[in-house]
Amino acid sequence: MEFGFSEEQRMLQDVARRIAREKIAPSAEYHDRTGEFPLENIRALGENGLMGIEVPAEYGGAAMDTVAYVLAMIEIAAADAAHSTILSVNNSLFCNGILSFGTEAQKQKYVRDIAEGREIGAFALTESQSGSDATAMRCRAIRQDDGSFLVNGKKSWITSGPVARYIVLFAVTDPGQGARGITAFLIDTAREGFHRGKTEPKMGIRASATCEIEFTDYRVRPDEVLGAEGQGFKIAMGVLDAGRIGIASQAIGIARAAYEATIAYVKERKAFGQPIGAFQMTQAKIADMKCKLDAALLLTLRAAWLKSQGQRFSTEASVAKLTASEAAMWITHQALQIHGGMGYSKELPVERYFRDAKITEIYEGTSEIQRLVIARNETGLR
Image 1 (tube, rainbow, N blue to C red):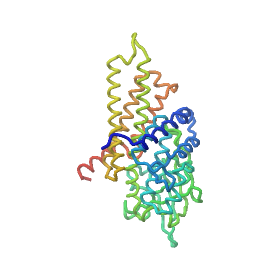
Image 2: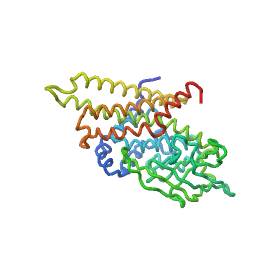
Image 3: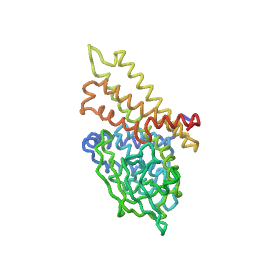
């Protein structure tokens, strides 16, 4: 594995860092407090190639690799995790699936506007009774005589659902086939039969709008099927493997922000006549924070590198996501503890880092699911 970064990767990282510092960080508290979707900032990310980092240039993307995506995600997440969530869904869950399984016409129609930041994409797999167990979904798509499908049902916890123009939807087309009876569809939310529910009042990543969506006799044309009929579960699992690299990167960005804030604080805050960073107990926490942060970064870069090389990366993506998300939760917890009462106050962003970190242990596969994936891949036992 090459530990150096190319000039192009560094340049994209610099662009992401500049936007993060100049536009996202100054507005992060406002967007967290109000829950307002940061459309202007997302447009800026799109205009600079960050909403389609791995998308080929012919479809409006930056034509970069997964390592560049990780570097950019970390910079955005360090400024505000909610922005990085939107970026992650567009890049990993929406564009990646269409690029991997879509037709040329589908790539031209659905990917370009998303990659350039003109529209927002979403990924609809979860339902109220089927989170980790995706095969338990109830949303149905019934084939009609003309080859189209009528979709009926609900999806829950859809990131960017309140603002998305296009959605990759997974629905049951053959209930008797289990995982092989699920099909992926491309949804235009401007069409009749699509409805949005209320925006969820989340604990963290509050500017990343999330809602329930519902379909009532929504008609999908034959050319809006993604991949082959019955291939939906395979598509979803493949996309989630890639998505876990994005969430690991997000967790690293959150953890890095909390760590850097802590380093600055322990140098300035004094107790008993000396900086609190001089106390051995504080130093032990700092050392452990640093070790966990570096381990998460290196494991995530390993998974990204493997994906960029076209090699298998499922286990490595789960290892990265599990390690990084639990490191982020631990590091933000320690950061808040070291900050004491000020860490509990909304005057400082540390409490936001703590709230934002928790979701990284939950979405795109909980920590429990990551452990199952890793163990099953290692043992071959199901």
